[in-house]
Length: 160
Image (tube, rainbow, N blue to C red; front, top):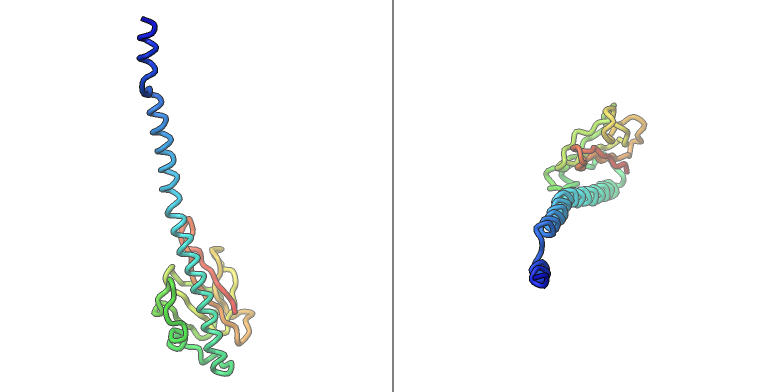
């Protein structure tokens, strides 16, 4: 009789073992599902920053081709210089002559603004940086854009 009991207990898994395995699998799945959106957001932000670098390079090329005339930088000739970008479409890139008096960044996640005669400075609201004419040199270029953060958009600016 003892042999029959021992044999019956050694076959298969107990319900507790099955529940533990399912709980571990659910935990792993939850971690993966939470990590994927953050990875996608980081990938988009990296592409945005690469595109902004190309915009800065393109703006400098346009100015250099016009013998340093910063006034020659327009949305049209910048878009022609850039061609296709990875994230941004050329229609969402605009050039604004002259920087604003106070730091400004009105971009959303899909737009880029290039300010001539401007530099970057902290925004008053404390959410990133914007372009301003205060303290800028005449040939200064400030490029404002936004990236995605965990709690919404993060304003950013690059100066050339």
